Length: 247
Image 1 (cartoon, rainbow, N blue to C red):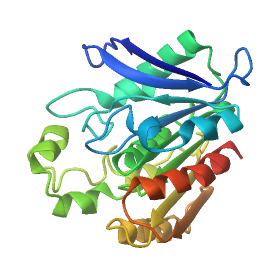
Image 2: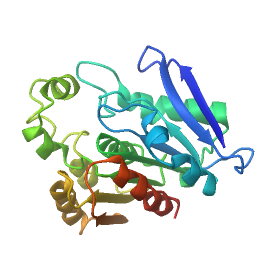
Image 3: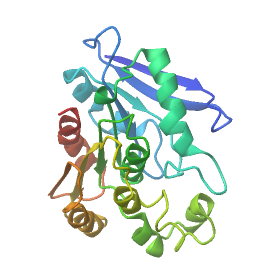
Image 4: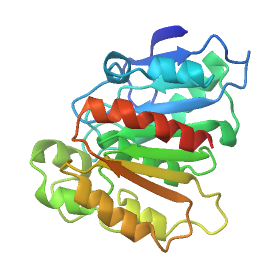
């Protein structure tokens, strides 16, 4: 297994940023299936490798994994801050495909994340459906409209969405439910997978999202099990998430 840490300067951020990449030795020379794997709030690009067995899971599946640093920006182009959506959705994919000879094929490109990263994975895949065959959310913040009404991280929320963050996201590209309802009829639909622990504070939101998706024309799967908002749950459930995405 090759473990690579590299730093580059995407135009969307206008500063150096670091990514971790795992490349399985058993992978093909090029056209490598790829998972873009996003961290949660207060995390960084090192979390998945430090706290899970993602290298082993990737090697078993001949899968490259790219882990960027999204800071606390919810993978959005912030109102007062950095363009994390443009970076992760566009520049990161272009850079890693060129440098690491990753697949450019939609059917071999996937995106997944935990908590804030689950929100980011769904949002990015729904806004760039031509790029991702599937996406997955682990304990994700799947209903940002409701979550912002009660959020305690007000300074970060104001920087991301503006001072009116409690009311301004509904019906916008920040609203995953809106992206589902307004999804272009002619666009390819990414397969969607979500899971959440039954003891997680976001469990009710995830159940509500499951019910919301029941009559939507998407290939959507929801699973749950015992667990809270922690790495023990994410290490266990990233395995079925990957297997579902790879189909």
